[in-house]
Structure formats: C-alpha cells, structure tokens
Image (tube, rainbow, N blue to C red; front, top):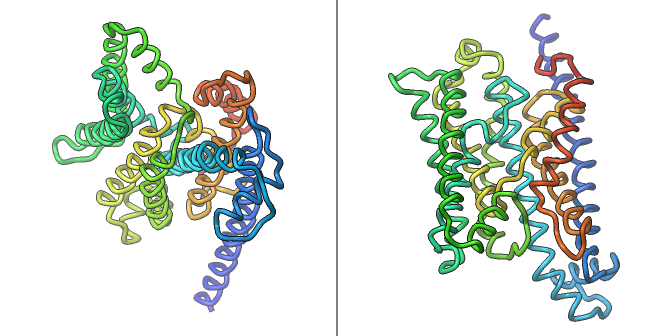
Length: 358
C-alpha cells in the first residue's frame, strides 16, 4: 500500500515537471521565433516580415514569391548568422549560469565565478595585441576558447590540491584568478603601442555580435549544443548534489566525477560563447534566476529553459543594440549590464524567499 502511494506521488510529481517543461518550452520557443523574425527584419535595410519568411523558406527548398537579391544577401550573409550566434551565446551562458547556481547552491553564481570569462578575455587580448587576429581569422576565437578552458582547469586544480575538493577553495581561487588575469589584461592594454589595437581590444572586451559570420556559427554552435545536451542529461545528478554530497552519494551519484564534469562542461559552453562574442555580462546570472522564480528550481526543467531564455535575452539585447544609436551600434555587453544590474537588484529586493527547496 505504501509503495503504491509513493508510486502515485512520484507520478504526480513527474506530471508536474512535464507540464512545466512543456509550458516553458512552448512559450520560450515562440519568443525565440518571434524575436528572431523581428530581428531579421530590422536594421539599416528594412525588410518586411513577409519577405523575411519568404527568404528563409526559399533557403530550405520551398518555392516562394520573388524577393530582392539585396534583401536575400542581407538576411543570409549578415543578419541570420549574427542572430544564430547570439542565440547560441545566450543559450551557453544561460545553461552555464543555471548549472553553477545549482552546483554552488548560490543564486549569485555565474560563469565568471571560476575565471572562465577572464581567461577567455586574456586569450583574446593576447591574440589581438600580438597581431594574430589580423593574420588569421580564427586566431581570436581559438585563443579566447583556449584561455577560458585553461582558466577553468587552473581554478579547479587549485581547489583539489592535496587530493580533497573544497568548494570554498574553488570560489576563492576563482576570485584570485579573475583578479590576476584581469591585471594581466590591464597591463597589456596599458603597454599597447597602437591605438587601433587598443580600440579593438576595448571593443572586444565590451562584448558584441557585430561582423559575426557563418564561420563563427560553425565554431561555437556544435560545442554549445553538445554542452547543453550533456548538462541536460546530468540535471538529475545536479538536483541531488544540491541536497548535499552525502545525500547525493547515497543515491548513487559519483560526487567527485560528476562535479568535475559539470564544471568542465559549463566552462566549455562559456568558453565557446566568449570566443565568438567577447564578455557579455549578466545573462548567466539573471536568466536562470528569473526562470527559477517562474518554473521552480528543478534543473530538469531549469537547464533547458535557461538555454531558451538566455537565447531570447541576448537576441533582444542585440536587436536593441543595433537600433538604439543607429547608424552606430552599442555593444551588447554594455546593454546587458545596463539592463541586468538594476533588474537583478530589483529581483533580489522583491524576492527574498528561498528558491532552492526541491
């Protein structure tokens, strides 16, 4: 009898998770589609939504009415890859933020907490300052990606010195490594002899999606999609880790291995994002927090929804950044910081209740 009641309760709980997942997916996928189509239509060359739809349908093999060749080139070669990169970057930062907030059991955690963003920034700055980005198109994203991954493993290596992992040590090591790498970036900026290189460095550090092309899509999207899928598969184990190491171990979770994998995959996703967009703040901090308040703390729902929510956040920010000071363009990272900082402070003031009880 007791077993039957537990099975029924488990079924109700699973039904609730499925319902939340379905509702969140429908709403956020609709937002991704609407924001994407609107973003494709807006810019220095205004293109009607009808023509945008025709161009996209034509690109996948459908017969459509005639449209302008200029419109087709603007959509296919300029705006579409930029929007795909933006959505991928937002998804990466969203899932990485959700994972780290759960892993650290701290809603203030984000991908920058273990030095990933600082490492990516240093790698990109080195590539620019050495002139490699001008010689080789992929030098900047490759250096940024390598720096992000190296910083993440450096911080984790410090946290496991002596053979015992310490979350407190990892957080403190992240603070120290962030400061150290930031100091190196500042030193490079100070000693740059070329004002054009200095402008390029500062432009990249502010974060943006201008001049993103299909090459950037091919660099970032597979890594981000694979990382997101793996984090979704590990979402149940992340739920158990949030209850504590002993409880997770008693439920069959290999705590040490799972924690390493979660950190490494989060760093991989963030590194891929930083490599093609620069540092874009607050996406990994605000998006999971807002969705947790709306959908609950279960990571089986929160991680996939954070991918979609992050994509929407960055796509909207990029669209506004392109239009707000037209014909010039605001950096996406600046805009997300302007919006994200006061919005997150308002959320903290309004929502003081505990949101981590499963």
